Each structure stands twice: as structure tokens, then as C-alpha cells.
Image (cartoon, rainbow, N blue to C red; front, side, top):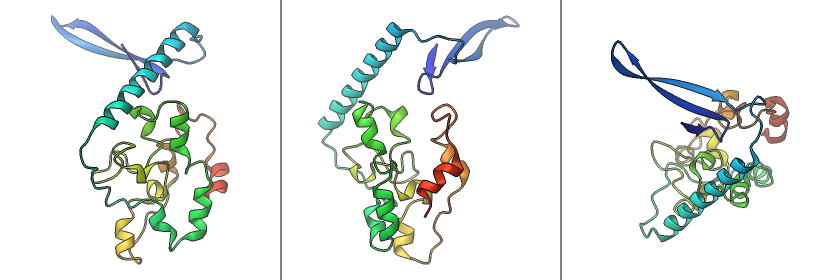
Length: 191
């Protein structure tokens, strides 16, 4: 068994015999209102996540490797010189402070959380690696929605990513943000 999607479901793998051979049958149990919160288990899970986060923080701090290249990502400050008004709007937004939320919750080194609170995580090239190595990409910056900025910096006429509603749902999913309303939120971040 394994918890998944921020503890919102329990995955179960049953081993059965089919035609005399072992087979695995997966089950997903959504942990909804049918399953009351177990306060003792919740405290244990939070404590374990705190410990794992701190181990990851310590191991990252001890890593002496050179920081990897973030290109083709450039970081929001690189966008500022041409898009000052948009930059100011972003800088005062929750997206700009998304990583700070994780630090406050002691989840800043917990990959399941970090992926939605940084820029360029999991990119084919460059992008976020960890808070020490890619501090320039902390928070949900321009490039999360518009794509890597280096091609646009190289040629301002190059097409730059149009935002698609589906993109937002990558992080604002029903499991992680059940009350997400694209139209209402777009009014706050539109530019």
C-alpha cells in the first residue's frame, strides 16, 4: 500500500493468482468523507514528512556540486526590463510567494509539493533542481505559464507561450485545489 496525491488516496496492490500465475491487481481508494480523519495517524504522517523534508534540506546543503545551468529558463527578473507592469503585478501575487508557503509548512524539500511551487521542475533542459541549486526559479514565475524565456530574450519577436486553461489544472487540480475557479482566478492574474 502507498499514500498518493498528498494523502488523498490510498493505493493498494493485491497479489492474486490468474491461471496459476501471480498477478497484481491495483485498487485506488479515495480518502474522502467516508474515511474520517485519524488524528494520531495524521500527526505521525506530518511528523514523518517533516523529518524527510529536513533530511532532504540537510543533504542538499551538504551537496558541493556546482549549480546546474537553468537555461533555457531565465527567471522572472529577466522579464522585468520589458514587462515592468506585468512583473510588478506578478511580484505582488501569491504565485510569486508560492515557494514561501512551502518553507513555512516545512515542505520546501518535499518533491510532491515542490513541483507546483517552482519554475521549470521536470523540464527537458534546465529548470528547477532544488532550492539551493536553482534559487532563481523559486515561486510560480512567468515561465511556468509561458514556457522558457531564453528564446524570447534572444528574439523578442519569437512567439511566446499562450496560456491554456488546462495548464492551470496541472497544479490547481480537484484533488489539490477543489474550489479552483479559473474565471475568478484569471481576473486576479490576467495580463
